[in-house]
Image (cartoon, rainbow, N blue to C red; front, side):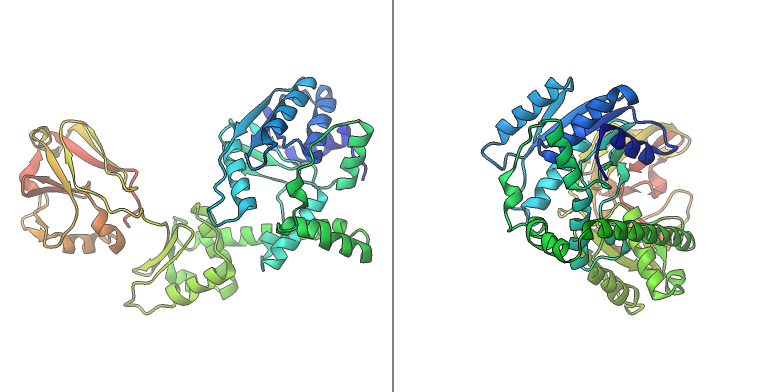
Amino acid sequence: MSFSADALLDALDALIGNSPRPTRYLVAYSGGLDSTVLLHALVNGGARANLSLQAVHVDHGLHPASTRWAEHCRSTAASWGVECQVERVAVDTASGAGVEAAAREARYTALAGLVLPGDWVLSAHHREDQAETLLLNLLRGSGPAGLAGIASRRRFAAGTLARPLLSFSRQALHDYAVQQELRWIDDPSNEDLAFDRNFLRHEVLPTIESRWPGAAERLFRSSLLAGDAAALLRDLASIDAAGLGTRPDRLDLVALRGLPLARQRNVLRHAIRESGLATPSAAQLQRVLDEVIAARTDADPLLRWNGVEVRRYRDCLYLLAAAAGTAPQALTWSKQPRLELGAANGFLLAEPDASVGLDPRLIEDGLQIRYREGGEKIRPAGQAHTKSLKNLLQQEGVVPWMRDRIPLLYAGDELVAVADLWLADSAASHPGAAIRWQDRPPIH
């Protein structure tokens, strides 16, 4: 398929479909061949589509010439009547994820910070990029979602990320660039065979194409079929998830165990994704089944990966962001209506003039925020007997891993409130200050 500005705009129209038209296109402009062609073709077709364009160049600072490359992008875009914003980022090369992955993370983080509602970020991935991604994911043991490769369109920050060049070959883009006499940057790191993608691009795919001409096109078609399969699996997971409870981070284990194993794995991936957590590998997912779901009924299993915790309590499976490494600290609360608790534990609010609440004089005199040490007791407002905090938490069904993170409010040595769960009868006032524990991790 040949490439032209009209062909690009047709591809964009197909991606937009029945959705509202983007208010602005942000073009991820590296200065390389592919993004140069993308930006130039958009400029050429802008009159037809009435496009609002802005280029964004991310300077990773990984090459001595990166500043010169940024200036090339700025001046080239300006010559076409397009503003180019340069974002300089610091790439964490010691993260353990590898330079490619760390640079990609820094790049997308920078782009996400510029996206406004209605914006579309356009990336210049083409057909051979898709073939490389499919092969990489196949070698990693990915399922249908991985074999679907690069998504042509997905949600991104406050807007949308789209790749309108996926159906075009690199050769078609090169032919356009030569015809239009474009100048682009050749990044020498793209020739470094130490990177897996470069090895596939320069060594593996040419060999495959020499034996099976048109292989990249067939791999692209395979990615579309895998995308269809992945979409069907997502639909099935949504159906199954509806029977597992109302929260993606807390699943009914009895209902989950009633599904076939393949559907258990499928709905777990879906729930983890819907909870905004890092997707597990196949091995990690199998450990959830073997070590958490299948653990003894009296066990307290815990599995962790990449900032994710999977736990079980009272026939529910919990999918959680890993707790902050530091335990919450004791604090003094006096006069101010809001108190930050730190350690990813939210904050406390004191709302005045509630029909029943904490005696405002206690807040005025100052409260101490502490955490469980064992043996705490309280007589909740309206109840006749003092009860141990341990029993109250068990009766309330508070998950065990949150019990030591619940803020306890003390006036001197007296426990006067347990977050917003219980108010001591001796500290109640009519009216009073309602205590709210906001932005807290789930406790049930």
